[in-house]
Image (cartoon, rainbow, N blue to C red; front, top):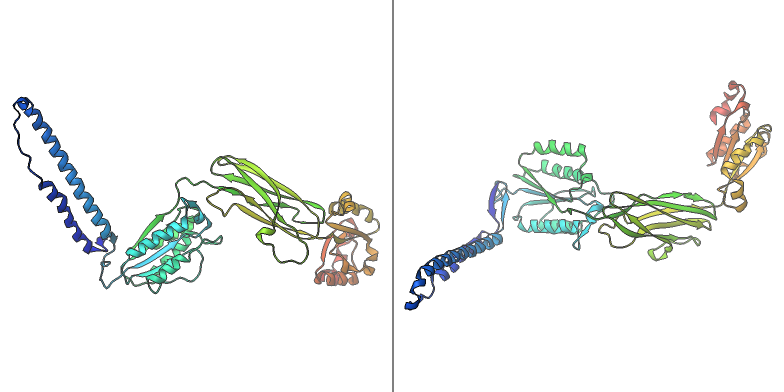
Length: 448
């Protein structure tokens, strides 16, 4: 490593340090005036004069130091590998790796973490000597390579965006190391722009990174922390939808939890889009407010949130829970859900005559009588004796349930096999009526 200046000509401005020195020395000499009455103060005057002179010399040194610091800043000193001096024929490779996970959308002081990383990278590229190879790697997983020039790299920077499916930044760094390994440049610099969240650095990936970096002694790795020391965030957890497939008139319950890194009260609302026929997918304005609730939350704890609504007509319902108010990270402030409301499915319960009365228990499980009378049961059950199975039209049923059946004939097996191949459902619950197991070893049953 060596210290170089991107603008060495500006160092000539250091000559301005002579200005305060000349002004200090070029002062008008005081004219001595004798006051006999003040002769007794002469000793005190000498001591005070020495203190003033020391103070003036101290201020002079500060002025000189300020000018030198200003000149040094404009000269842009950087630490660079050997061979990175301006005009050298050997130029290092520069790889910029960006964390593009949703966390990088965290807004602090009016700027997202990705915007902050982009600004720092643009400032870095402005200091890179011309001729250096520059690559930009993000978490999207697309093709990567060295850009044609610095302008192309700046275009890539402007196109960076966060993605919910972005790979961990440690994996993106591995891809950047792959570029360095296949490059013949003298020395390489890798800059990783991330919030340093632990979730972005899986242990197995970190071990692989450590091994690969050990094999690249001329590669320098720099982590650029764009995170926030004490982030504040409120988030909605995963949704739990009770009865996501239900019948018209049923109640649908939507549950989640609210968590936060700080104490506070947040408003959570439910917005829903109800089907009105064959329409296009809903826009934002089509979602109607169906409920709102103020939820209190403490740091490190979760507060339950629950809403309910009635699915009055068949169709596909779409909705979301939204966290209102200011929140630095918006990605976890909404949770979406879909509910399918359809008429009750027809289910055929088939059993021998002596078992048929006991199918009431299964029927009540599938379609409780109180809900069936209100038209809110998910299934509509029909019961038939097993002997009637060859005469029943199975196409109108979504599923056929054989309850404690007797051994089936090959003709019945063929019908059921064809019914299943056409998309129907079949469930078989064997019981005491099964009889001799050898009777279930027929070709038809094996095919079924």
